Image (cartoon, rainbow, N blue to C red):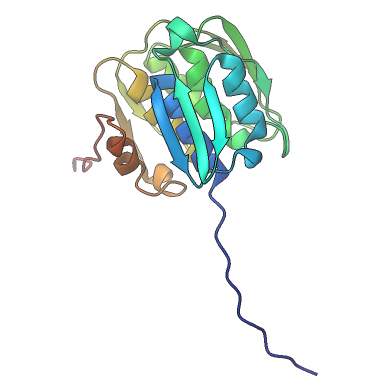
Length: 208
């Protein structure tokens, strides 16, 4: 016997990787932000590492509150981590957190265990002045006081978010090309960042 389905209401869960990306952006640049609808319980491994780095984070009704001292290198401590399956540290947050390590005190190691060729953003971070060496599945990072603006190219979705964060931290102007990668996973990221005071805009690629 067929039965009709009944009506129901469902609230879409916030994207944990988008929330984690904004947490890393605030951590790296400094400031105080409330992320509406973010679910701290979905980002336990990332939040633990941010707290260990020296960032203040508290789950609150309706979202997550974060406060970071900034500039990062003067106050925050680089964190070693390895990507693993949920609920471990997500591979989709590896690149964004690496930016924070690049401008924090000390040395760190990032081990990628999920995907091959997930360090393609490293060469672009080097253009900005980061100090990173790769050995197989491990990136070894030495924090530097400052990144410098440059033209960089996004190689995939999370790399593009990583480079946007790096551009916000860097002195001078940074241009991130091939941002169609970014649009696959983030809704108007530049608009949201600009609402927080970031000096960022989307520009049309010049035709050859």
